[in-house]
Amino acid sequence: MEVLKFLILFLFAATIDWSEAGLPSLRQGSSLKVEEENDFLVSPNGTFSSGFYEVGANASCYSIWFTKSVNKTVVWMANRDKPVSGRGSKLTLQRNGNLVLTDGVGSTVWSTNTFSDAGVEAQLLETGNLVLINQAKEFLWQSFDSPTDTLLPSQKLVRNTTLVSMRSQGTYLSGFNNFKFGDSNVLYLVYNGPQFSSAYWPMPGVNVFDFGRKPYNSSRVAILDGVREFISSDGLVFNASDYGFGPKRRLTLDYDGMLRLYSLDESTGLWEVSWLPDAVGVCLVHGSCGEYSLCTYKL
Ligand SMILES: *[C@@H]1O[C@H](CO)[C@@H](O)[C@H](O)[C@H]1NC(C)=O
Ligand SMILES: *[C@@H]1O[C@H](CO)[C@@H](O)[C@H](O)[C@H]1NC(C)=O
Ligand SMILES: *[C@@H]1O[C@H](CO)[C@@H](O)[C@H](O)[C@H]1NC(C)=O
Ligand SMILES: *[C@@H]1O[C@H](CO)[C@@H](O)[C@H](O)[C@H]1NC(C)=O
Ligand SMILES: *[C@@H]1O[C@H](CO)[C@@H](O)[C@H](O)[C@H]1NC(C)=O
Ligand SMILES: *[C@@H]1O[C@H](CO)[C@@H](O)[C@H](O)[C@H]1NC(C)=O
Image (cartoon, rainbow, N blue to C red):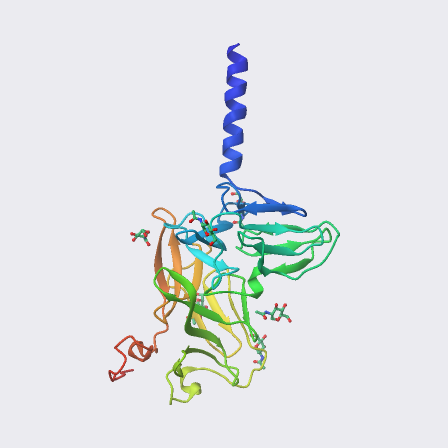
């Protein structure tokens, strides 16, 4: 009797544990539902989770977040500008291999536009990359190809990708600050608002060579490696101030227009800034000193 009780308790505990830990993958023909608390994917070591993230009352975005940071820091969203309702919305991996996000009334809000009938699965990798992978281990689609405001270690920023800040603190809508390669092959920060557009880093009016940038390499690729270094084909190179494989990192274009490299303190779940663009005229960031104010810049 005691043994049976123990066994039942054990099985019960094991079930809870499993459901709390999230799902390892999503198979063809299955869905994650917005109202099911345990319907989310988790990466093999649990660093990242992916599921519906509440962005407002009755409003959710399908997202990827750091599991062990305070307030679950979001690193990617499928539908940041078109949240779905908190009832009836779901993410479905259809039998034809298309990953589709539908809202409460069943209309498609977002999809990967992929097609394959051969054993496709959605998996969240330990890098934070959400992938559609087939049995030959080929990626049909990956979230790393369409970043929102954050670049993760091993994720590349390339010629057709742009980091776009959030609109304001706590508002996940696309904002107006962008980080991308320009026509001159140089990575830059630009405010791209409804009224006007202006680049603010590297400092406008100064020759980019003075900042160690090289406009002649047209490969346009940048990457944050696993250790601490960011390397770009335009010559922009920087290190996180803390060294090593230890901390989890993210490079985020924040709502205030600043690009920041963060390291996670896993004991507190809080982020620490481990790099900032040093030559940025903070006051050049649009709006940081008021609509009509004039800023001066000192190197
Ligand atoms: C996952 O955890 C295992 C065991 O702790 C560790 O050996 C491995 O390096 C981890 N993998 C990643 C990608 O962090
Ligand atoms: C977490 O969220 C709460 C509620 O929105 C907020 O008050 C708090 O400052 C946040 N903490 C951090 C570290 O962002
Ligand atoms: C959430 O929004 C949907 C669609 O707008 C609506 O049908 C539903 O009643 C709302 N639910 C709640 C709890 O407000
Ligand atoms: C960028 O181009 C690659 C390769 O052509 C493609 O797979 C990816 O979806 C594109 N990303 C965006 C955001 O357009
Ligand atoms: C251009 O950048 C790429 C990527 O960083 C690098 O591999 C390549 O060597 C660079 N080419 C030149 C001519 O510097
Ligand atoms: C980054 O750190 C490595 C290892 O300490 C060093 O070799 C490299 O020069 C550093 N790069 C920069 C830009 O400081």
